[in-house]
Image 1 (cartoon, rainbow, N blue to C red):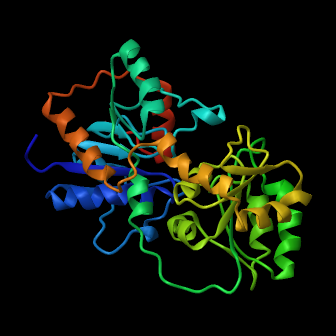
Image 2 (spheres, one colour; image 1 turned 90 degrees about the vertical axis):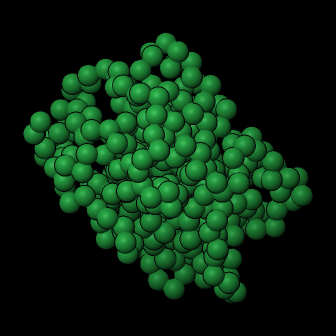
Image 3 (tube, one colour; image 1 turned 90 degrees about the horizontal axis):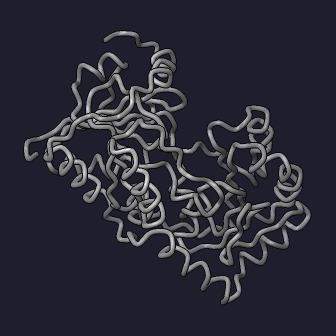
Length: 341
């Protein structure tokens, strides 16, 4: 399909903007149109000058998109167009999670061989979606970001946690982070998943001051570059940090790798942080070796591959063969408050 197409980005969380913008830039450079449907926990205030929002679901439908691109695990079937999943994180299978393919997407754009193989096996069985290995869009944002040159006087420590209670360190580490922040030795940069329990988030916000700053998820790329080390748990952000070739401290990671410093006692946090701030040669080598084991696409040019995969599928007389998913789509209609045809 060589003519310009209309692309709709479906956004439920603030972290989606950094994922999707490389594709927007690539698409616009090729004279395609892009609009954003922003719902749930995301805010249109995060849009930049020149970025266009669909005002509501009806406007998104009237836009008649050829393609709907989502980094989350769901997308409304009642909006027309090829449904494309570009993922909100790198492959998590090594941490015990397998992507839940639910019959909502026509095309999956994967970051590397592990997820590609899993989904291709399913595609052969289910026959209603295709898989293309393109690289992960957010890596374009991360790898092409130019941070401002600032000489910070203290070590910059990023803290980020997943929201799932059994996988999160947020409650367990809060007292120790409070103590360490009070010392003034480190500059803490805190960001939490949008679905984190509100009481937990409030506990970290209450620590804000000269030694600890709280950031929303739309600032993550900036924080990845600013921080010297990260403290996390099982959040996918630790993989992004490792791809910046910097040390990671994890708390109760379910599958710790040699490139991580994993602890199971909050009292061990400061010692682990100091170890990360002065990494041994063996640790740094494990960090450097990590990226190619996750994805071979570290060139910052995944967006053109994703766009080409979309255009190829449209050009090959794509047809919607997905299951009806009646209950899931009814739930989405209720959430989006849309019951039209």
